[in-house]
Length: 200
Image 1 (spheres, helix red, strand yellow):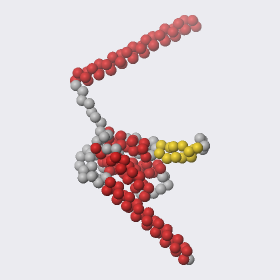
Image 2 (tube, rainbow, N blue to C red; image 1 turned 180 degrees about the vertical axis):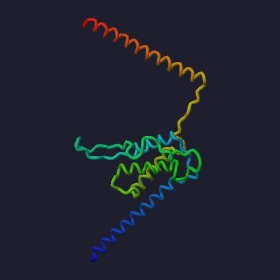
Image 3 (cartoon, rainbow, N blue to C red; image 1 turned 30 degrees about the vertical axis):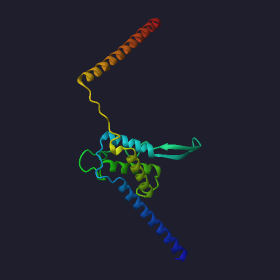
Image 4 (cartoon, one colour; image 1 turned 120 degrees about the horizontal axis):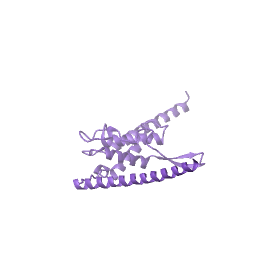
């Protein structure tokens, strides 16, 4: 092996080590950014909203289209890696919500991997770019106030009378709809019977 080959190999090794160090530092920054004494619990509704909004915000890439003969923006639909529904491990209603195995931390981690796979299919699952993307998602979640309950569904409590009124108006609408269909059916039956008479 020549000196040039040895130097090239050393340069490659150093570059690889630098990438590993940068990657590790980025993951440490992820953990520090999301370090809260108690990460709040997350409901199924919050997880569903957060998942969709993160994919919408981060999962876009420009690809060359031979059909359009130009660069087009491609969006991740979310059903190539995970389903459209939140994973069970993203929902956390009890226990230690600071664990990576469930709750907000797991949701952000999983979605960052999903989006990373969509944006860079040839890259390694764990790399500097994925760690950077995860950090960006964490910062976005914190900045949007999602950990403060901004995505919570405000449930409206209805009285018995209000429930009865809603049910009544719904039934009235159904009756009107079916009466209109009945009238239409009657008109068509009359029309087709007259046509049949003319043929006979």
